[in-house]
Image (cartoon, rainbow, N blue to C red; front, side, top):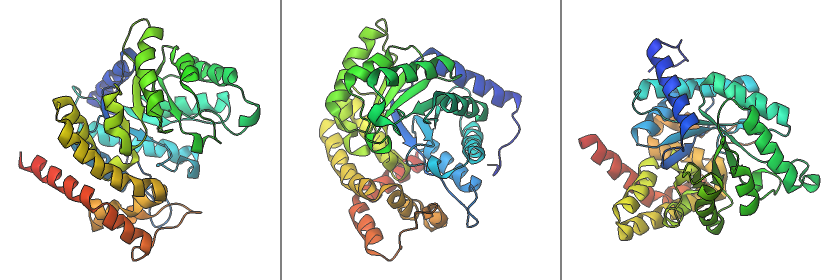
Length: 349
C-alpha cells in the first residue's frame, strides 16, 4: 500500500463514480461504521502510513463504512489542509483494499458553526474522496438558536452540499443541543439527509426514527438510523436500527460486526453474551474518551502501533504503566480475546 495519496487511475475514478452513485441513490448499507481515530507522527504531522494501515485493517474486518473527523478523530485539532489530507489518505487506502463491486462509504465530519463554512467543508470533503458528510447541529449559540433555525440549517446544508448528509446528534459535542425525535424527523424529511447517528444513547428515539422516517420519505426505507456507541449495538438492532457508528470498533471491529451477524442469524443468546462483553469494554472507552481508545491501540493491534496512542495537545498520552492503562487492559481483556479469536478464524478461511 502506498503511504501517500496517489494520482487517480481510471479504475479509481470508476470506483469513485460508483461510490458516488450509491451515495446518491439509496440508503447506506447496514452494519458497523467506524469513526476513525486520527494519528500523528512524532513531529506532530498527520501519520499517513498509520492512517492507511488502520483503514486496511478495518476494511479487512468487514466493516460497512468509515467515518472521518468525528469526535474520535480530533478534527477540532486539525487545520483544513490536514483534514483534507486525512480524507485523501483514507480514500486512497479504500481504493487499494476494495473493488468496484463493493465500494466502502467514507463519511466525513463537516460540521461548523455557520452554514457557509459547513458547505465549504462538505465540498472539500467530496473533493478529497468522501461520499457523505456527517454534521453536528451548530451549538455555540445554543441559547438563542431555536429548533426551526436548526431544521432550516440542515435543509440548507443538504440543498448546497455536493454529497448526502447525515445528522450527528451528540449533545456533549454540541454545547448540550439534543435534537428530539420530532426535530430529527423534520430534518429527515429532506431527501438528501440520509441518516442519523444517535450518540445521545436514547434507544426510544432510535425506535421512533426507524418507525417514522419511511412515512415522511414517501414510503422509502432509505434513511440510515444508527446508535453512536458499541454498548447498545444489539439494543438498536432489536428495535429496527440499521447498525452502529461506534468508536470502540477502532479496537474490536470484528466483535462489533459479529454482534450484527448473530442478530441477523437469530442467535440472540450468543449475540447478548457478546454484547455484554463489548459493553463492558466500551464503558472504558466512554470514560476515557478518544485518549483511552488511542491508548488501547497497541494493546489490540500490536506494539507496532504504539505511536498511534499519541493525541494532540492539550491532551497527553496515557502513561502505559499508569492506573488508567492497566484498567483498560483488564477491563477490555475479554473483548480483546474475542477479537483475536475472530481474527484467527478469518485468517484460516
